[in-house]
Image (cartoon, rainbow, N blue to C red):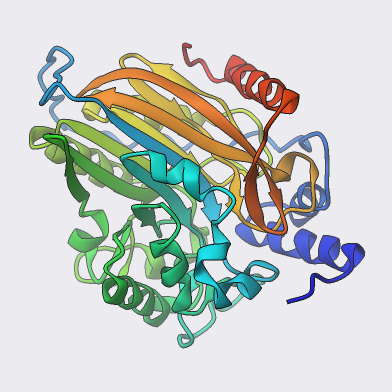
Length: 374
């Protein structure tokens, strides 16, 4: 499909970037090519409810089989235009970044759209994302191994839309976490074994509009997404503790933070600490539509913001993206690195040449306000 003139796409970018919640004016600035983040209002701290959970016993960094596993993480993925035009050739959607993803043993991103042609649009929600079932054909050929649907667009078309998403995933055999026909399914980890290392991957979200909590959260037998808000944060902590007992490496992918806020919020840092205490080894996430810092929190690795990935962005900081690679041997984090990319025409293209070193230095500088160690 012929790409529309630049001014039209910039306008589209502004509308789409604002779709993920928060201030529409801030999103528009980022998508249209803002070079610095707009100051966000102070984060609202959500106090974790009192809990009587027992902390897991302190153990040395277990190495499992003793073999290392490499993980690759990308940010937000959706299939509105101009990305949807690529779906006629599913391989082309992730083509520029595919080789980077395929090098990893486990690659993951956030699927920020309902994959459905049905469902009822969420009332009062101005921006809604959906994609045809061919989105999973693209994901299957992307180099990704698993996606999370726990985010503020996973149920844009209601329970029917999420059920269609899960059905399309099952048809292609592509793993999805963070959503289910009931609470148990939504919080169920995806499990895989790589060179004898037992891996558990969990998806959840801290970002759901308050008025949608009663219909979007998976509770009991209700179809929904895995929430980490209020008392459901305890549910996520228990899920991590349970996975810890039968896994060598536990990964949690969260939808968290504030749009265009370049430093982690109080709720982000608080839940990261709780999850590390519960036994998570790698905690990553997205939602801010810009990159945030990553580093070590105790013996775990945390990245507070993976940014956009396959997502329209008109330039500036919203178009800066990349893949965060983490190598772990069981519970030991052996190392990590950032592979920079820039979104062009909705797709991430790896940065090469002299610009690559500069982008890596910029990413490392993002750690300064995170409280994380190098």
